[in-house]
Image (cartoon, rainbow, N blue to C red; front, side):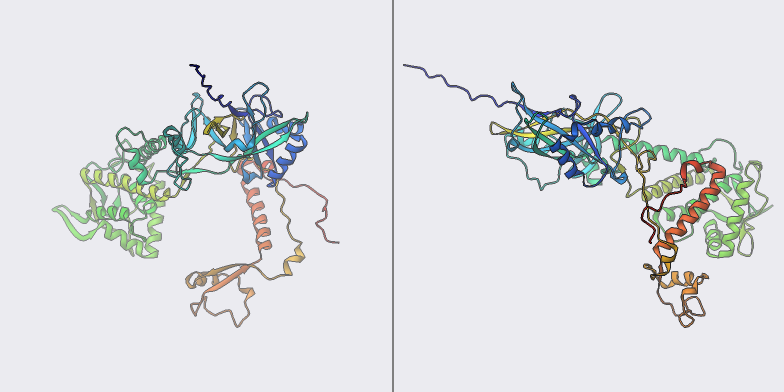
Length: 550
């Protein structure tokens, strides 16, 4: 009985991205273009061999204007665009090019390299960015694909919310090298000007990370620490007993207002309540309501040798009455300016000599605040300040690319290759490390030329930049002495006697020229302080170069 040996199918040879023949031989290649038609430019450079020239690589040394000498990539706002490319080869003797038809998909990931050597990936959870997390070595960026491959299941539905490392598409194409040999290239746009994460994760994401055994993102810990530090700093801004700043700046007997005259601690407290918290004004918010309810507990009294007699008013009643009257509000603001200026010379255990304004006269009452009430007011002030900060930063996002010392990045290409009926992910060599320029980085900015019109051309067309103003705003604008554009029959005697809405139109070129003139004046004035004129303003004679009409 003969035995027939069963021959196993030959193993599929490994294919992965490698440095292209026109690169440095160590890393994936970055290419810079200074116009938005960079895709056809790159393909043309790839076809005619221009990528291997010294001119195409010169920018890699010229654009090292970071403090540490690292390569810097500009953002699209600087009108600069970058392409990452690598070569696909089969890892067998001779290293033939991979057939592009075997490429299921190709892409790149942008990773951050910290100083301690940890490589981080920009991670999404169900479509929501959660920021930089430790990268998985050589794993599929798509979590759903990774799980499906382990289970032997088909690829997941791409319409579902994405979880995993953010990747960007690359494209496979063929090209001929300098010796006429066919090569397979993957290339793609490097998006260094986009991407951000919420300052704080949505509530559903918070609960997911709060489960036992789940570790929350570092961004959440960092934000919580920042909030705690902010609360401590706010407490230190006010003296005891209304804050945590050490030193005795309040009267020990608790009378912080004595016959209309305020103690140094109360002066600083009132300045925060009036100017920062905007108490007793519209709009009303829950945080302001809590503080106002606390002020309503502090009664105004008249002190006599026989005791204190209530004046049937509270500190909140007084503040509302003052802020409701424009003249009284102005006197209060002037009083705060004077009181703040004299705080350094006022003894801590005394009261301010100038009495608080109240309507047509001065506040004649006194206010007693014990230590417990002051402590509760301090806690409510911290909570209110935190709520105002939360409201201000509610829609803020953290940019994907920063300018800190640890913000050094690389672009890493990868391909998904069909081999032996399966799909395998192969990562290639990373690009040279780079930093990303800030949008207002002066060294990253490129020259911009804006053509201004001739002075005679300004009078040839009607104003075209229009603003529609409601009746109450129009009433204020019409009171300004700029009514030369109105004929006598249209200009009302009163500012807006009929309660009409008005449209105000301006010449956009004229607005630009006015802004230029005002900017030059302001720069000249501030040059007295900053001495910056040689760096912020340049005036050069230049031939008209075709902009002057014959």
